Length: 170
Image 1 (cartoon, rainbow, N blue to C red):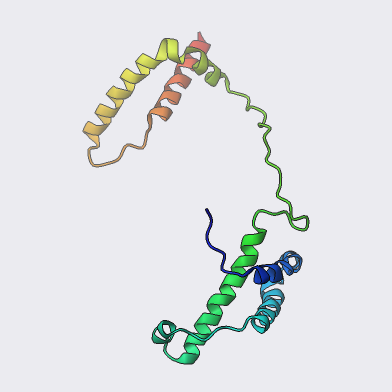
Image 2 (cartoon, helix red, strand yellow; image 1 turned 180 degrees about the vertical axis):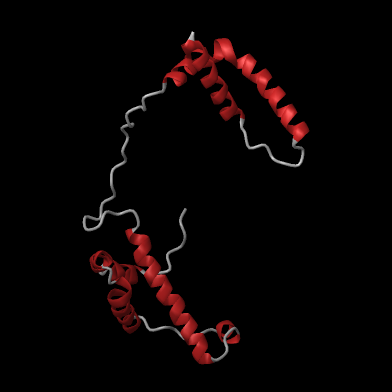
């Protein structure tokens, strides 16, 4: 369930009528200088800012300040309305782009990565676990105040790269 609309149906239709102009002004990079001043002036002609409530008057320095704050809040809402109602659209067509469901071509693996895939579970996992445990105990004993930067993943990759080089040399 979404938030309650702050506009009436008539206001929503009025704002939607300026949607194409908003998109064009964004493309031309004239939204702040030309589009919003014109639209906000027209908006306030059609729907003048209501008088501030007692709470708004109490929270402001003066009655003029309360009116100014209320007008700025309404202006911000109008601006946000345009941004929210064009989010995710392709400019001009008003339709959203399609999801790209095709997967990218798989990356070519390095030789040591293929070696890892073929031998890790059957040959190296238990040895790496034991080596990692010994490595972390030794490191913690020597560097008790510092956080270890090496992770098991990087340790495993380095270990397997070395083993691959050793087997390749043979």
